[in-house]
Image 1 (cartoon, rainbow over the protein chains, first blue to last red):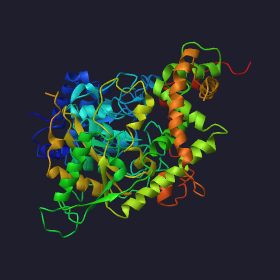
Image 2 (image 1 turned 90 degrees about the vertical axis):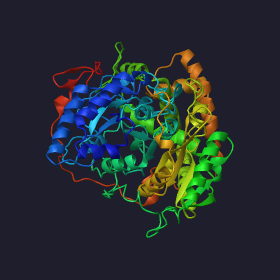
Image 3 (image 1 turned 180 degrees about the horizontal axis):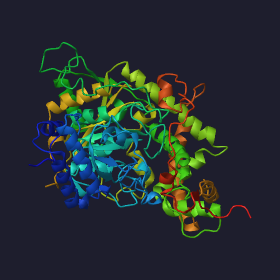
Image 4 (image 1 turned 60 degrees about the vertical axis):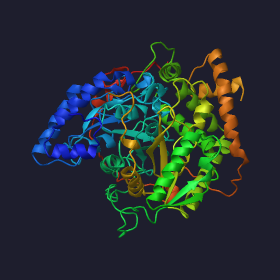
Amino acid sequence: MSWHNTPIALMAKALAAKEVSSTELTQYFLDRIEAGKQWNAYLDVNAHLSLEQANKADKLISSGKASKLTGIPVAHKDVFVTRGWKSTAASKILEGYQSPFDATVVANLGIPDENNPHGAGMVCLGKTNMDEFAMGSSNENSAFGPVLNPWNSAHVAGGSSGGSAAAVAAGLAPIATGTDTGGSIRQPAAFCGLTGIKPSYGRVSRYGMIAYASSLDQAGPMGKTAEDCALLLTAMSSHDPRDSTSLADSGEDYGRYLNQSWKEGNANSAKPLEGLRVGLPKEFFAEGLASDVAKSVNEAAKQLESLGATLVEVSLPKTKLSIPVYYVLAPAEASSNLSRFDGVRYGYRANEYRDLNDMYAKSRTEGFGAEVKRRIMIGTYVLCHGYYDAYYLQAQKIRRIIAADFQAAFNQCNVILGPVAPDVAWRLGEKSKDPVQMYLEDIYTLSTNLAGLPAMSVPCGFNGNNLPIGMQLIGNYFSEARLLQVAHQYQQASDWHLRPASEVA
Amino acid sequence: MKLDDVQRIAHLSRLELNQAEAEAVLPQLQAIFSLVEEMQAVDTTGLEPLAHPILFLRDLAQPMRVDQVTESDHRAENMQSAPAQHEGYFLVPKVIE
């Protein structure tokens, strides 16, 4: 039986019906990981530990103590610390680091034990490659080599959750976790033909997530379908007293609206989205958008219309400014977060140094990659006395305008629709020499992180070279279940998300 | 931004750049800061800075947990990844002569 194109919603049914065991499923994916090393999707795999977890999952299933997700394998982005697997955030400065504890996301999804009675019972397949400290839009910034795109290995997988995206697209994991600071779930999902959602800021605990920019980072699922993402997100999110920005637990089932019509009581099954107002921001369809991406997203909008939705034009006037605002705020927070990597308590320490200051500087210089150093320096500069008001405070003030613009748009619509990225996955090396050109690629994703809104990527077509195109659905705060409902209804009427990656057997 | 600035912020960041590296990174930082300059044209008079997205949504006070011990002693586990240690202490170069 081939399991790598099976959504986890179906896998869960097969496990419950005892058609397959967790051990068999886990071995199946471990074999594929071994055979699929060319994508460089994983940084650490420990078959023994995965199979041990699978065995525990099988026992839970046979004793009737299983949750919906028990026994299903999952891959974790290397930004989450995990007991048993190495946690490096794809940086040389953390090479070989083993965490003494699990991130809350890992614990929430993992095998339940006395410390973690509410674990969903999923089996960890290993740690996926990423841009170093989640800084990047192409997954070329990993200290352990770039991730290749399973649709065309001459192209990038997208960043920074590129390893998670490639793992699912290449069938090396049925579903994976990612994190999104400026688009790092949505853009690799779009580049690899997957569905991924960044929830509202505060929904998912950041405890044990190696921090990049704390006021922007948020974890979410990356999978084949909206239904799979709903299942994983429901298990991932919880209130966590160890994360002071974690919101009260709503106990939500994010899949509760999936098969319902938008308007309660609407029995017209041909028009399930009747009553839904979809806003198209004119700034998202302006200069810089590749014509084939524009065409696919517009066709997706028409498809939503044919399902009953009404299309309205909205405006997000500060869209262009989200790039400078993000590239001030994120590096400022990064320069502070990454100051903990000094070679004293964990991680890499330089071999030769004169004194303590020299040890700090040499360890950091040898341990961090070029993009990380660049962002630390930008952050240090904008926080300097004399520049703080002009850069950092000004960026925070414009952040408020950007957040307010979204609220004005949501007065006219329920969800916002646009492209995820200006183009499809580019060729490896094509943009790595020019950081500004790379930063411009994040134009459609950054603003939702600045505002803390939920947003998702849904496959909606291919370009002329058979590379996937994603559409972005943005919702108001805490509307994840509604976003997933719209995406699910679209996926019932389309098959873009079901097509297997072209290089995958 | 000038070459001197690059070396100054590298020093503040506890990073070392040799002359060639500083010269290579200077135009990249200049390009990034010319992008950042676009922000200066926006009139933000009277606007409060937004440090955190949830502050936009509702004015939440910083939640405080009860001041009690919640973690037991994990010293041995926490020391496992130390680059150098001796009898449960982190070893660093001598800082006091």
